[in-house]
Image (cartoon, rainbow, N blue to C red; front, side, top):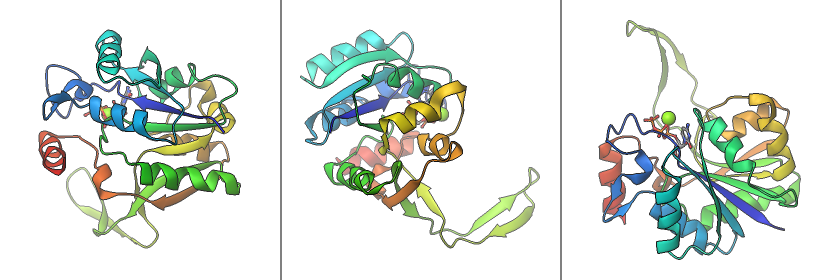
Length: 221
Ligand code: CTP
Ligand code: MG
């Protein structure tokens, strides 16, 4: 089975608030993008990688992949205005005979072989997609714009979902067709009737959103 990874790194990183896109923010001595790219390249589960770079940053992304010696980095394309658009751009580079596509946020640098193995395994048992998730531990409230609590949401069975997310390639292609939008790929697959399973996530898959997240992840390295 051939597994293609799409590493989405095309976001602007507005909440991080730097001059350059989030993928090129410094994590230690390297651009953030280096860590997940190297980890995917070193994973025995992954056959090839498509990097989706911020528009205008394709060349620095290609140079970085070369510097790191990433032999599996097959293509680098510019992303779109939304995450779903960026996934569509990446998927266009995946050949028709790929069986499985793994989509990962570059903003979650600490992807591991363990979690990749966990999301790939259920695809052989009839699932269309598999995502890592962590049970929500805080109490959840629905809050109005003025801060007033509207409702308290029962927490049972609620998960915070991460990436990498694995899909049968054909299912993901159908799900992204026609310009659909969702905050993750699983949402697109669910909307087209796909069966998606949640497996154990990893707290270390924290997504870099703010400068604090970047510092926390740097301290874990
Ligand atoms: N992403 C992307 N293309 C977009 C938007 C997001 O490839 N148009 C990617 C980001 O690069 C990131 C992942 O999707 O790896 C999750 O997005 P998020 O954490 O929201 O990153 P940004 O959109 O860059 O950050 P912000 O929302 O603060 O601008
Ligand atoms: Mg965003």
